[in-house]
Image 1 (cartoon, rainbow, N blue to C red):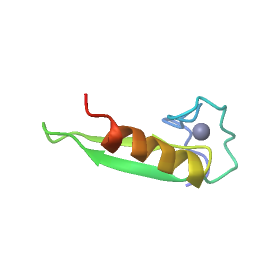
Image 2 (image 1 turned 90 degrees about the vertical axis):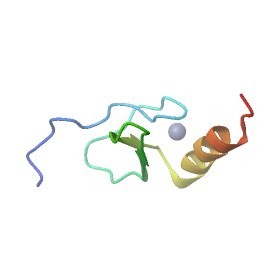
Image 3 (image 1 turned 60 degrees about the vertical axis):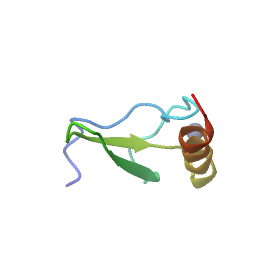
Image 4 (image 1 turned 45 degrees about the horizontal axis):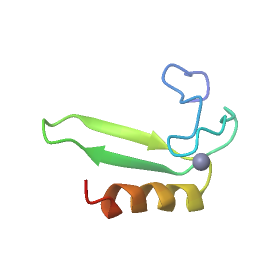
Length: 60
Ligand SMILES: [Zn+2]
């Protein structure tokens, strides 16, 4: 699966850093209440954990 670039994310979902196609980045899969599944991609593990903190730590 190296020639399919259909839905490759262009930027980190947390900080917006541009992503490169050849690099494997950490991802998070989230199941929405309506059954949809969203996949988020991050520039590195630290950024992914910061994103997780934002999701669970924001009381709004
Ligand atoms: Zn990032």
